[in-house]
Length: 231
Ligand code: 9WO
Image (tube, rainbow, N blue to C red):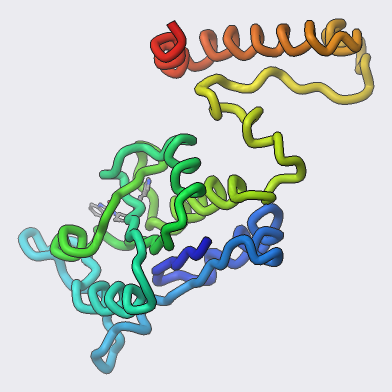
């Protein structure tokens, strides 16, 4: 999978995308993540990428020229889906991560800054907007990292064991069952007896009950959606 990231702050991505699952996935060649500095497409002598907002004039807006030029150059290499990280998009879900990981589309992730991007760029060049939550950040970069991580860990063989993805929290709309490890008793706190019993069938049943019950208690919104799907 090829991911192009357009940003004014490419250095922000170094740590998160070089470590852990994403780093290993890149080393193994399962994904290629390319960082592009929007400033490289600024044509004037000051390499200006922003300008005063029309109207109230408060705050800066990313100019259309560098954005259009950048996307046109990247699209020359082949077709790609342009995704803008923005609080105005629908919320990113595990289902959307799964679809994007399974598609063979090249993705171009655009990270905004300041007060936003000139709307003409969004209308002409952006295929999809995605939000990671209802809050405002300083820019789209952290949201893009969340999206990349959510996708790349689902690419084939990106997990330690092939079965891991299906048992992930939210893969079927439910939260995970609680997890425990050794010791079986810690400061008088016991691991649930059933997990030590070795009865794999009954353990699976218990886990599923826990998932349903925890989802109902902790995330009633997800629980309602799950009961509608599984009535
Ligand atoms: C900045 C600003 C300053 C003064 C008055 C109003 C203002 N609005 C904004 C603003 O919304 N800036 C955004 C920063 C512009 C687009 C990139 N930025 C961004 C993306 N912040 N938060 C996100 C984001 C992306 C995905 N999911 C959640 C949040």
